[in-house]
Image (tube, helix red, strand yellow):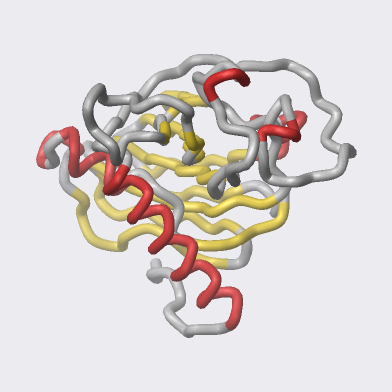
Length: 212
């Protein structure tokens, strides 16, 4: 099993810049991790509309994304997506070794940007007990309509600000595969009263879970 390539192609540079932007947004958002499995705020699927990256796109949708993969409690894991191998050939610790804050920091996309959608992700790993497992995850199926998953009504989002990158994060945890998404969305009001750096939401939202 091999780790992700590290060559700095133009696409990779875009990824580094996107990660830096996202990390800064999380830092100034007042550390507001809200992991949830809520449904999209809207159900329309008209993604052939003109894309602006603002609230004018309502219901919000995305045409490109960042991807990340994380493994916990495995005896090695490999995730292939968009032509890149992700994962860790070594044993990986349980998620419980991380604080909730650190876990939230880890669960971000680190590769992209990727047009919706590449071929399904291919997974190979050994669970904590040593069982060899494999799976394919089709993001095109999971994100039909390409809607941004979030927990905000339209009136809470400023009209003149840009919506952040949408992240798709795949997690292998022992025998369970989870898929999460998150998008940094500016808000009209502070999400933490009195904190002037918390005018955004960046909720981690689970969209899929299966135990093998």
